[in-house]
Image (cartoon, rainbow, N blue to C red; front, side, top):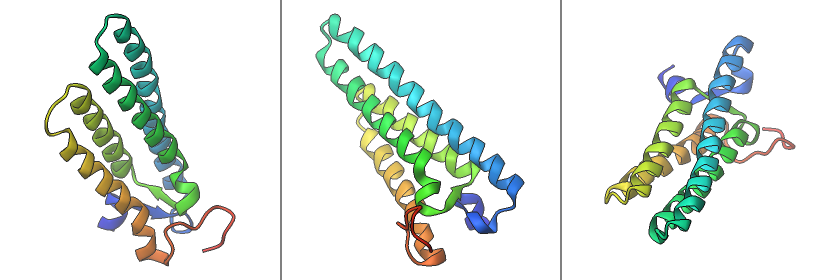
Length: 143
């Protein structure tokens, strides 16, 4: 039960109402990351006009990472057949935004937040292997 709260649950093991609620959390986190990435691109472009090259680069790279994680997280259930729990979705969102903020502000510990995010996200992918054997079974393959 704790594993399901921290990571999520397999499609065929979740009741339909739980799956639907968890899906909404997962999609809202993905949408939020994509919206923040777009804002970062716009602000980063405006910053360049003010001749703040380093901040421009940090905002553009940070926006690209936010966009990538937002897109990949939205596709996560389709490729792993595991629906992230609301806690898992919120953790991915909070850790990603925390990384972005610390990176864009140039704080020395942004790499620590990034490593924690990468490890947790990797666990979300690997946890399927512990449940059914192959963490990367695509939607066209059976498990």
